[in-house]
Length: 258
Image (cartoon, rainbow, N blue to C red; front, top):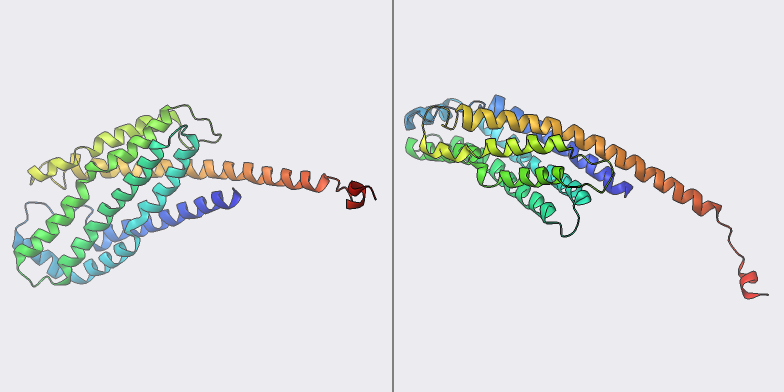
């Protein structure tokens, strides 16, 4: 048990480290915070990649190494959901599966931008299509992500038998709101400008802010819970060792009556 809990703490830190590197690459190298407007022409998009070819390639490389940061994160979340879930672990399975699928979408977008920058001298229309695929994939993850939030929200509202839960009831309400905010993403297929475009308030900025706040709230809750679980496990282990040392071993001669 002690090793398992310590492993979860290490994996959570691993996820956070990759998350930070990915965010820095998105912000300063790929320059997708905010992304170029959807109203850019194919020639403008191609010029953007031509002029920034090197930093985009470096950003895609860093993102390629770190983009799966949500995979270890949701693995730890799924284990913590499992601690609180009784009966068949349907919400645990949903958290693990949806978290894995969410990771694929986060990974796909930098790959597209790296491909666009790999050979920007090609036809501008091709570069624009790859660029659009990357951005639309990034903001339209609402077919997957709400299942992640749903698993966490439901556990927050259900009875929690295990001690030191990282899922307080108030987190359930905030997680439910986060799920609703992400549901707007797919509307960006229909708009090139305004709040529902891929760089708009409702499709890009609001989900980004909610996602960032949710992670900043969730990580401390997880660490606090894991540290308390570790303390309990260490105490139980110490008590077990003390109990084992206090037992009197009966000599074999007495057992055999010789």
